[in-house]
Image 1: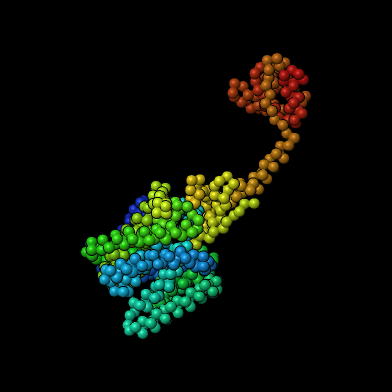
Image 2: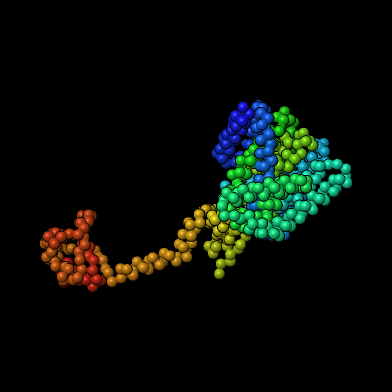
Length: 387
Length: 162
């Protein structure tokens, strides 16, 4: 009875996630860290049958694709263009300050260079999901520092869209020349697709925008999978193809697609996090606790400074700068996605990323909540160093 | 002229805000999903919101109406028009009134003034639509409706001046 087993095991896993999600809602945090924990626990104490395991694997891939698609859907191409122009400096500072610690940590830990590059990506990307949840929950959308926070998130998302194809090409390996060719093909394909999406997105939007919601859902989901598959064939990374489809769709069709595709994404994204947790070896977690904690301290400080500086440039006062800094600290879904690419390269990369995401995802929102109490501390120390 | 600033919030919507004359920043966020959010900044921390109110599409329209006053003024204007030429007054029946202790019909109010007695208030209670045989007491308050002139004559009649 393979079907019975499949349904029973999958159902049990998904119900467990529902419980975890409710607990997260009660605590007022995003469920992502808890999904990871659920996956780790599941891997340690249970063995799923082959069929459920395979389904979860495919579901996880779809989850990654949908995560990036909805991310692309979030932005209109105009928002991206304006942001790239207006916030270059914050974006560059953000990249420099937050990519480097991960890269260095990876090299110090003796990772292969490519695994170190992946760890740099893990520490670089703030979680736009957690940040927007903090902003919404604490009623901070109208705050003056909020545009800076959102701008940093947007730039990181764009940077990731360029970063992923590069990594995908590097992962293919081979001789130096082969890597070079792969890299060129990947970047050219990405640039061409990005250009087309920005330029002719409205045409695609018009074609896809059919009357019935059912047909719309099917055509969008189908299109996303086809483009993701084609991107994977070109070795550009499936997720990036999906991201570009998201960018290309705009206006009414984006508005209508969002509520249709979000439940689908939530389901598969949860599966994605569980899958990541499942693959981790519980035994390797104690060994990564110290590096993860150190990395959390260092990159929380660098991220904090990024937000602080960006907000200061926008003319925001101390408390707002503090809020901008702390809101950017949490890393989340995309850090996991990046770490997932390198599981084969360095055995401790996965556990390290998981523990790191857990720590920052808890630390950031807690710090973000206490701006009235904590911000003056930073102000005083700042005045002292100036004087 | 209010200096409105427009700030795009990528992934969220658009924010419009201005520094209010009375010291606080006021703004509206137009969420892409149609929600509208009104916020007011804090006085001690002008970058932050002290209060924000999320409104649905329809609620936002109602609030906009309230602020600009278009619908409401129209209603009030129509209401005053409807009762123009109609007066209503509360008239005391003093002790010296010739009608104190006599049935209401004896005043012949309707015939003499054109105004009608629609209710009598006695001991904090209202007696609506009293008949002609209803006895008036000193200290009653009579509710009179009619033309403005008629209401004035009714008051004079009840106090014995008419």
